[in-house]
Amino acid sequence: MANYEDNVAIKNFREYLKIPSVQPNVNYDACVSFLRAQAAGLGLPARVYEPVRGKPIVVLTWAGVQPALPAVLLNSHMDVVPVFQNSWKHPPFSAHMDADGKIFARGSQDMKCVGIQYLEAIRRLQQDGVRLKRTLHISFVPDEEIGGHDGMAKFVHTEDFKSLNVGFALDEGMANPGEEFILFYGERSIWQLHIHCTGQPGHGSLLLDNTAGEKLRYVIDKFMDLRQKEKDVLESNPKLTIGDVTTINLTQVYGGVQSNVVPEKLTAVFDIRIAVTVDHVEFENMIKQWLKEAGDGVTYEFEQRNPCVPNTKMDNSNPFWMAFKSAADKMGLQLDCRIFPAATDSRYVRKVGIPAFGFSPMNNTPVLLHDHNEFLKADIFLKGIDIYINLLTAVANV
Ligand code: ZN
Image (cartoon, rainbow, N blue to C red; front, side, top):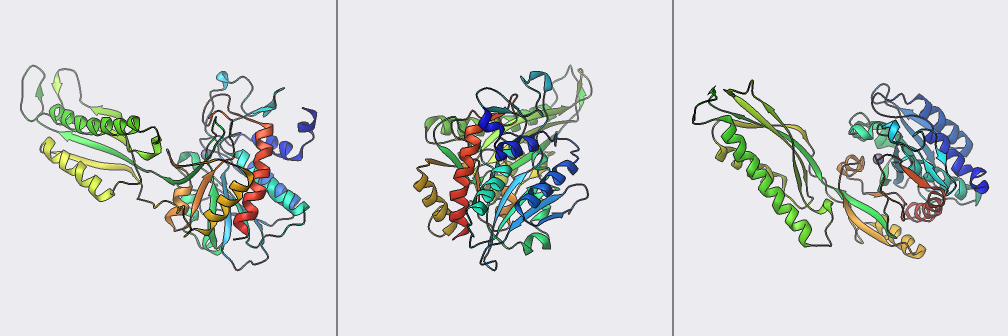
């Protein structure tokens, strides 16, 4: 492993992994200092924007030879999800590298690897004297793991972001245990709904009409029937992945006062991820109809409601895709193009009309994001840098 120990890219990766930028209440100061030092080492200007205090967005810029052309944004998030320390073989912020070259740390897959790979690819291009046509902006954002509301969600609406003149973006994807590399071109929309069922209260010994419980049962049945339908669709077609269907889960039920009192109100909470093919207006009308059928006094409110965001085009109307695809083909990469099952910052970027792909070059790697003992092998990490060298060259020369 001696060669890895001396490798600058591995050294930078492990140094970044050792910063415990773990949710909740992340202090991003150490990340910002680290990234400023990286920028200085690469001779790139770094700006720090703070649309929300304490939530810095760090942007390094490598100017292209035609800086008036729309730029390419290379995004990654600085924060990581919490850890259950006792379940880890090696401390999660030690970036321990074992004899196989596995680097263990929270963030090794999600997604400090990608942030460093962007920078190391640029370092190598600079060393080779390469100049790219378009400007590259490398952004490091906060709070993706808690929804990005104070990070990318706000940043895309600022004048600072507009002045970056972004025409295309790359962001995170996911590891794959197989040979293929997964590329995400769209995301489902999250809807989290509280459905309140009100009814006749009374004594628990009676058979009253119009109770909250009867209405709640009707509502749950409707949602669960649709859930089963989607499950059947997914299971009946091996080509489909979870991102292709609508998922529905009953996540909370609350209400009532005590065991022998029929309650005035019961509430069910559903987490729904709406497939990209579903019309949001029709979907909401269907829910409204179910609630009407359930009886009087059944209402709903949104805890979270993501708008419909169109997928990034995967055809010749998107020159960045054509460039990405031909560079991937030249390297012999097998791409598996999918809809992301959860949500990433890409949705905010796509929402303002910028094409974006989710791509983390980690094949032959178990999916360990948010899991115990998250690791990435040094050779896969280094191969990812080679992959970015070609991909960035292709998309920045469009
Ligand atoms: Zn992530």
